[in-house]
Every structure is written in structure tokens, then in C-alpha cells.
Amino acid sequence: MDIGTTKARSNRQSSLNLQTNDSNVLARTAVTLEYASLINTGHCPLGIYVVPSSSNLLVWDGVFFVHQGYYADSILKFRLTFPGNYPESPPAVDFVTDVFHPLISQTGAFNLAARFRPWRPKEHHIFDILHWIKVTFKKHALDSFQESDCPNKEAFRYRESTQSFAALATQSASLSQSDSALFDSDHPSPLGSARSEITFKKMSAEQLKLERSKLGLEEWENNGGPLRSC
Image (cartoon, rainbow, N blue to C red; front, side, top):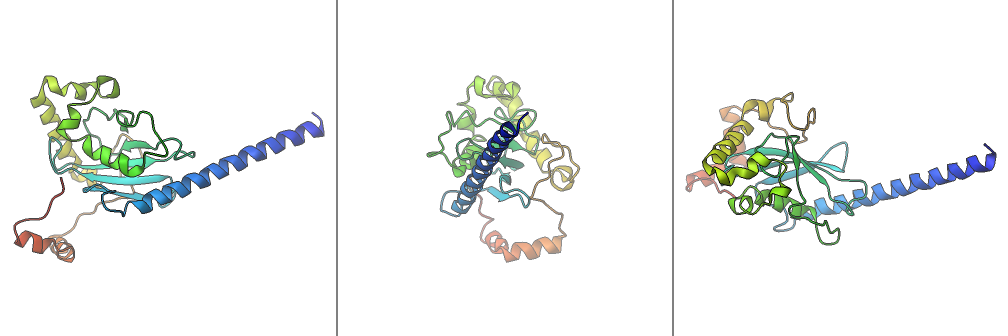
């Protein structure tokens, strides 16, 4: 191999590296702007919280508190993983908490295609994805899914036996609240050894009372119970 050929290959590799770095910079910039926009009214759905990973801006951890429907009282952890060419391609959504749902595979992968087909980078945003996640746990959405979009075929067939589906959804909700699911860092999940940036810890009755007081929850209860999102 002559020196000229070696130099040409080196230049091509350097060019590819620069393109990759530029792409990652654009992706990180877009993700940063998306996160900042969540403070806008109506952008982040009630009951859903997200935070970027401390080690990788292109990974966000989230938790979804379900308040109504088949999955009422579920506490569901999930993860958004952004590709290096975001926003040209959508992020992957994976549920860390094991949940019985038509759009969620056994590995925890959540199918976005049921709503974003195709993904339009100038039109679709992360807050659209977060709202869609919330909507998919409501009855009217469950009734509208097409079988081809549902990796969990057993859950898709819930209309054939609504009572059985309701029981399995309730079981998912109960398991999501268990000590092992909330507090045990070694609890198995569809993402394997993935660790969420959003963690829960047990609190004594006195600690809980103090924190609730700081948040004004004590006053809400005295006025007829805490407010709940839908």
C-alpha cells in the first residue's frame, strides 16, 4: 500500500469522524432544547416526570404515575434513548417496569409507530411522545389499536375478555408498587441491568409527614383530599 492511498483513507476516516461528531452535537443541542421546552404549559403531561441521565444527555429516565383506568395506581419507570441523528430519527422508548400492555413487548420496547408513522422531525417533539405514552393507557386508545402495531398479542386481545385483561392490568399496577420494583436496585426488569436516574426510597411516617407538609399536601388533604391528574 503506497503512502498516497494510506493518506486518502486517513482523510476519509477523519471526515467521517467529523460528521459523526457534528451529528452528535446537533442531537445533544436538539435534546437540550426539547428538555427546556417541557417547562411550557401543557408540554409535560400531568403524572409524568423525566430527567436526563447524569452520564449521557441522550438518555432520559422517566416515571409515569397512572391515576385512572385499568392501570390505575401504577408506577411505571421508562427510558428514552435518543439516536445520534436526532431529531431526524425518533428516540427509542423502553419500559423499565414490567407491564402488561399491547404496545409494550416482553423486552420493554414501546411501539411508537402506532402514532408516529412516519416520524416527522419538524412536526413531532418529545412532549408529543410523552402525551402519547399517557394516552395509550386509557380505554379509548386501547380500543383503537391495530393488531399489527401490538407486539404483545395477548394484551391486544383484551377485548375478547375485558375482565381477564382488567385483572392482568391490575396485577401489573400492584407489582409496579411493590418494594422490589420501587426500591430494589437489583430487581429484574425488561432492560436487564439498566439503572434509572429516578429512584425511590422508603420514608418513616414522620419523614413523609414533613415532606408532604413542604409540598402543601397536608393542606390539600384537609380540604377534601389531594388533587389528582387524569
